[in-house]
Length: 102
Image 1 (cartoon, rainbow, N blue to C red):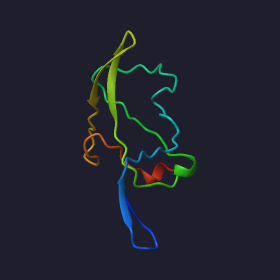
Image 2: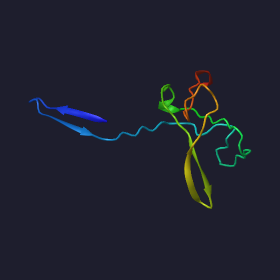
Image 3: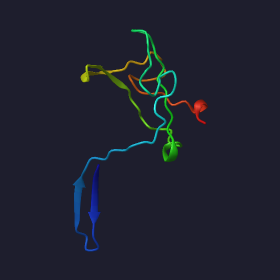
Image 4: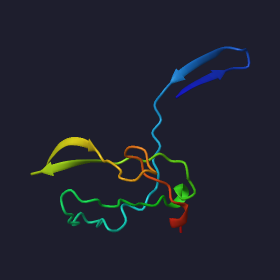
């Protein structure tokens, strides 16, 4: 993000900085177990769901993506983009579902 500040005399300066936005969310919902004990068949499709909560609950235009990595003996492998199998999503972006809002 780049911002410009101008004082009463017309002097101005610009500054560029990175902004990270953190949303409040529910954690993953079923069928994924929050404690990490979910068991899934290799190669199967697993629906990944979550809800924005608290002050973030009314946000409807967030762009959320999913990636995954295999962890073996506490060592993380390469990060892989998750692939959506629905025509309604783009790449690994989550799809907003107004009907599931509570």
